[in-house]
Length: 70
Image 1: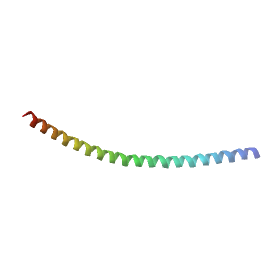
Image 2 (image 1 turned 120 degrees about the vertical axis):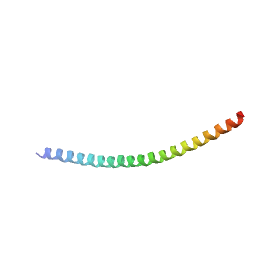
Image 3 (image 1 turned 90 degrees about the vertical axis):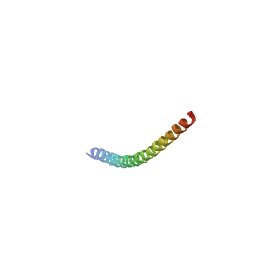
Image 4 (image 1 turned 60 degrees about the vertical axis):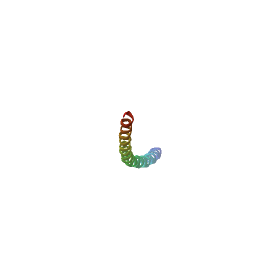
């Protein structure tokens, strides 16, 4: 009987340890998810800005090409 209680205590400690680590992992993944959402928004803003700048440069180049062809 005593041996069984020893195993139960070991198993219980192991389960508690795993539970704590899983909770820590869950918090880390949640933090990573939140950070990625912010990054995605920032990257979207940057890509929109870059796209606008590229479009503006493309218009300028076309206008210069037109002037050079005349």
